[in-house]
Image (cartoon, rainbow, N blue to C red; front, side):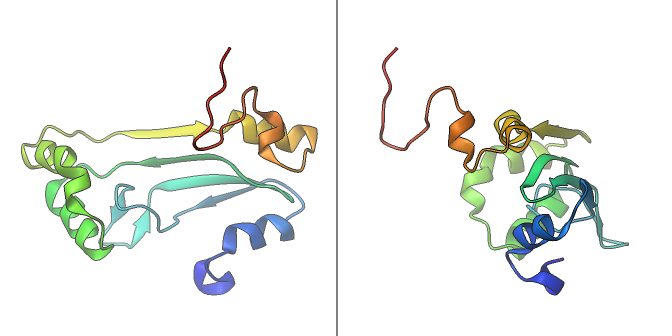
Amino acid sequence: LEKKYGSGWEEVVSKEISDPVWVTNIPREFYDFEDFKTGKWDNYDLFMPQFGEILSGAKREWEYEKILKKIERDNVNKSNYRLVLKLAKEEKLKPTAGGGIGIERLVAWISGVKHIAETQPFPRVPGTVHEL
């Protein structure tokens, strides 16, 4: 999709669709599982028309050599992932997968608000503290 639509493909796709669309096999973060034999990624996103992604998930890499190779390929700072690399090297990581739904994104899409901040019970603005 990035080759076809450019780096802003997510916005382009969500503007072009008229129904929800599942997007799978997306090259993403180094920790998403990538089958080096087939070049496929085990991940997904759900895009809503005129809005964007509201749901995302993936199988995770767990093998040390694969994680290390992808960190180096993607020019990621290894020191930020020391613990993950240590656990993978010790074979303490197991195959896992996860997914999540952006509740505020879903509410924004359903209610048709222009900005996700309108769905948040407490605004999240860097450097701002809201006392209860």
